[in-house]
Image (tube, rainbow, N blue to C red; front, side):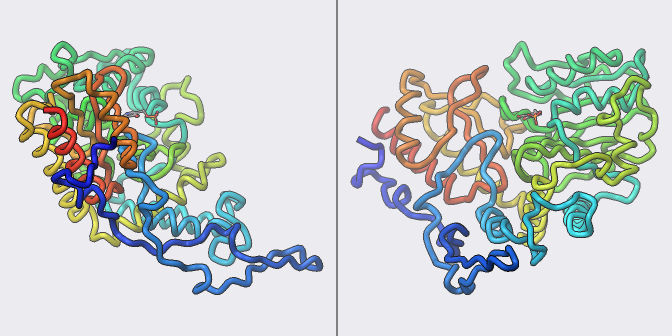
Length: 420
Ligand SMILES: Cc1ncc(COP(=O)(O)O)c(C=O)c1O
């Protein structure tokens, strides 16, 4: 039997369908006529025919995946409505020339909106690249230092560790602190760090997706000419960030701002132009900056989707408002864990717990499979912790509605009541 018995104390919450949304019927259900003469398709449905009010929860789940992750429903619906014929262009964004004026307007707006969201100054370039954050693990050292140069890595999880290992191929990196022996549960105090006074950069992973450890403030490189570099893949655009503290920020889009296939790099312009000679053209930030991310065919549709997400974040009131929502969601989930008297446990130090990825274990670990199965019956999916950590992990990125977190908390309480 599902954990949501009607008598369970949280049954009303679990059963509550969340917000009602305007739902666009799939285009294929709209009656269309073809005109053989002009080889065009015209859809006769009026807007009103096409709009029907349905509850989203009927066919969508709450997806707690770490990435690719849930996207805002209104963004998906807007993309759906524009898919077939973007703004009267007669084609979808996927079919457009990346050099044509339509796509240019899309990428320029995406960049402008991201600049307003993060208050990115003019002396920083914004690049829309491919190859994921993993490619940046190599591109960062290739662009920022010569082969023998020293660089520092502060490792608070396995993504930072992977970045360090990749950098070894291109320069002389040193791990100045690693949380590995403690299973990555904290960020060290910056005072005691043995930073190299000659390091070209100091690399951090601002939010370790697997372990749920998030920097709440940032260390300053000891070298006055060195820069701070951050992998922000899993907390990008989740809160305001002072970009000027960083020489370079990179983020794979597929957690908070779009589909996989796009990686965003924000880099101070004076750092460009010194790539190692062997740097592949596709990894040279200057080439991409000089060509406005259009040196080759970019991931056009992914960039378009990121643009819709940026527009949506601005409509929500910008990143201050987004952060408040994220704090609220994370707060109720961490409270539920901490108040469970040990039934659930989050191993991460409270001061650096991630607002985006909430890992937790069950005291009775043998109940894990049942927890996941029952959660799935309630349309809450992808709660399994990363294979290297075990337990559970709820990724609650910007697009996870409060209703999703409330439903998860209600479920957890009922599950505990049943099994304590
Ligand atoms: C913090 C962080 N860095 C890097 C990566 C690797 O990203 P990609 O798969 O886009 O290369 C991930 C992916 O999950 C991540 O969470």
